[in-house]
Amino acid sequence: MAQKGEKTPGAESLAEELVAVGAYYGRRRARRHPSCAFALAATKEGIDIINLTVTLEQIATAKRVLRAAGETGVVVLWVSARPEGRMAVRDIATTLGHPYVAGRWLGGTLTNLPELRKRLRHLTSLRQMREEGIFEQRYTKRERLMLEREMRALEEDFEGLLPLMDAEPHLAVVVDPTHTPVAAEELAAQRVPFVGLISTDGNCSAVPYPIVCNVGSRATVSRVLAELRAAYEEGVAAKKETPVMAPAHSNA
Image 1 (cartoon, one colour):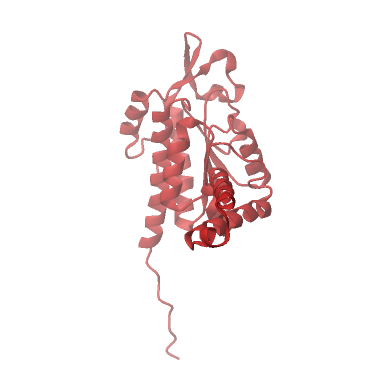
Image 2: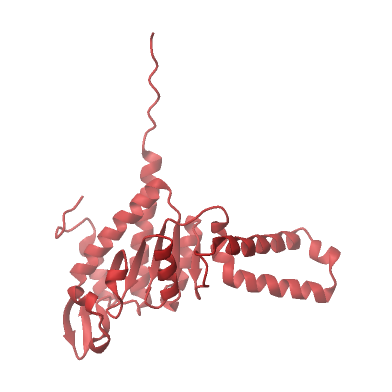
């Protein structure tokens, strides 16, 4: 494991990519949160410039967390209310079979999980009824239209959370928790640690594993999330490659 300050494999190329996509741009100085001062390199024309050396160290830390999660099979909740990260979290979570929120966070998603699961079961039931042709067999055209509308509304709000029917998240990745304060509050209330991509106007001290970067850049967000996904998948692969020792048999 690389020590702090050492370059990890691929760090140099990642640094170049982050520079290329403008990951170093923060918010205006007037909006700076004091907790992010340590991550700044300079201020130019009123805009805070992020020290990417700090960002790379934070990414490396977050990757170790995600890799460990992959090794133990931990379910990760991927969240982005910001449009810059919605497509990426949806694609990553879908590929991994994890829950996601790509849009508005609904209050009580984690703090009222029993109620959420009721809605998820109802959505699953409606889908099954449609697939089995029960809509056509039992309901009038007007009733079918109302059921279809209800199902679409449920899918819009809850489709990404269907994996929570049978599991609970023990880790989360949140794109800009400052933009989704209720999500951050519920994660904290449920004691679920999370990696947070955060800009210079956010409270870094409130994020267990912060990554200070330009969250207003789709390319930056996608690149950082890709690193985290890869780390999780490395953990999954490492778990599969671990040999299982046969139990010792006594000759007695």
